[in-house]
Image (cartoon, rainbow, N blue to C red):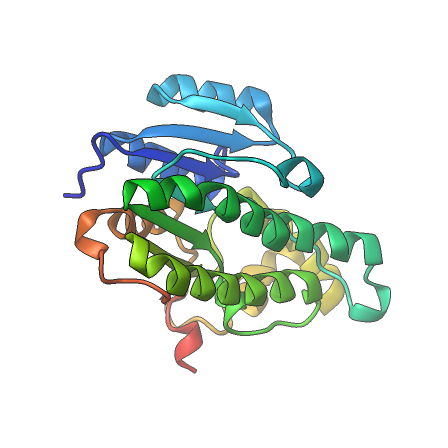
Amino acid sequence: MTDLSGRRALVTGGASGIGAACVRAFAAAGARVTVADIDGDAARALAAEVGGEAWQVDLSDVAALAEARIDTDILVNNAGVQHVSPIEEFDPERFSFLLRLMLEAPFLLIRAALPGMYERGFGRVLNVSSVHGLRASPFKAAYVAAKHGLEGLSKVTALEGAAHGVTSNCLNPGYVRTPLVEKQIADQARLHGIAEDEVLESVLLTESAIKRLVEPEEVAALALWLAGDAAGMITGASHTMDGGWSAR
């Protein structure tokens, strides 16, 4: 069992989905968790549930993060959204928004957290990437670009942080049972010309050898292990949890 007693964790997008599962897992292991989310009410409710703290923040406002300093032992960059559209129809501002939220904000949060981690000689940076950080799918230009960039950022963080007791890793799930995935179904049905009830089998799970969605708690269990002392030699890696998708 991973023991995080005395550790502090910050989870972005922490009020729902994978983030909420990580918050609960870390808190159960003894960490003091800050739930960072744009939905302040949801963040405060979950923070109260686990005895942690809430931080209502719009991570797409990258200018506000530029001079931040964050004291945390564990940083989970999880916040994200999806937009499904052909490239020729992809709204440029929406493309920029996704990159700000899922690549620039993680960079700025890592930048803000590393000095304290270096001072303490311990840190865990956990970047919730995706199988789309390693593989591409049509109609997801911004998401795939952001996640591929996050993979590179995570590796650079691993190399720079190694001498200071800081590890950095990506978690790469396939489609997870979250509101983010559920919101894609109508768009995917329209783009592929199929009924919504066909999307799961015909689009979302077509590349996965295991024909089910990943559960948020499964991702949180991997994050919890990577946050602990036993994973001290694991860094600069991408940990797939995609049902065999990337084995193809």
